[in-house]
Length: 125
Image (cartoon, rainbow, N blue to C red; front, side, top):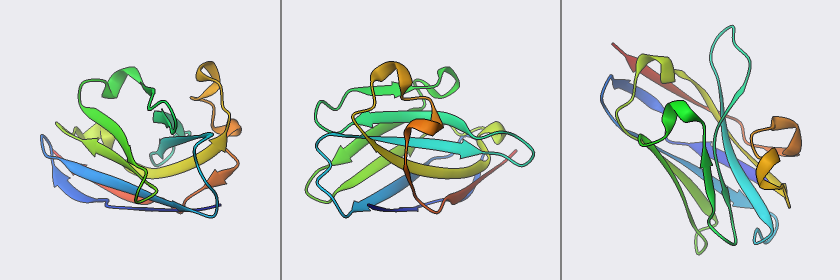
């Protein structure tokens, strides 16, 4: 399984970005695709996840109502639409994939064996 994350950049506070995670190497119907982020000097944290089959989604509290995760099965791509960005959203964003991750474990990075290379998101104040 290979994951490629892209779409990061520099944006002013209140702006928007859309991250993409292109997946290849398997059929992903049993997978969960997650987004994590890591800011300098901080631990990697969960942002959002989507179950490929059911499209069930989950978010960390601080991004609810601002971020939306979705997937395009024809393109094997998962998107993270980020609106109303804040300086505290600044981080390297990673997409990750794992098969059969139960809902209660989707926020745990250790549940995801496959990771993309990360894309930098910088939000200026």
